[in-house]
Amino acid sequence: MMHDSLPYVLILYYSRYGATRTMAEQLAAGVESCSGIEARLRTVPPVSPTCEAVDPEIPAEGAIYAELDDLRHCAGLALGSPTRFGNMAAPLKHFIDSTSALWLNGALVDKPATAFTSTSSLHGGQESTLLSMLLPLLHHGMVYTGLPYSETDLMTTTAGGTPYGASHLAGQRSDQPLDDAECRLVRAQGQRLARLALALQGMRETA
Image (cartoon, rainbow, N blue to C red; front, side):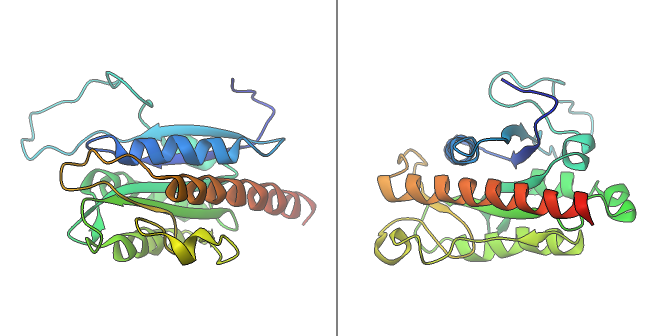
């Protein structure tokens, strides 16, 4: 349940077959394991090569579409996308490209941010996709936070997991569920982001 008085972490993602959406929900659970902050799940519409194609204003299922104010007022941001040739998916990039007004006003400066991704193959571009999402966050002046090796699953995982952010090996049919290590890592990422969001918000308020 959302409370207007509580700060929130915006979890903004695009998911084609559901794996990235599941990661977003796990990350939200990590955020909300911290008291005093909430998770806000938002998605973006697909990009169509046909200019006349119009997507419904409200998706049939899952999170609703993000608006710029969701970013403007967030205390922290997590971006999630499946990989597309080692890069973030076009729908998420299309939305990020619309955030120039936030950049001009410095709306996201000094807020913590992170990223997560899902791929069909183990070497399908997880790390480069996470790095592609890092770039616009740095241009916005955000403070990027990855996953530290104090999360020992990073040392032993045989599926997803990187120091740049949580990842998931979804399999060739994109139907492989998150394993226990992947779940622990993405929840830890959400928890860390929430802690940093609260701490940095306090510093901005007292500056």
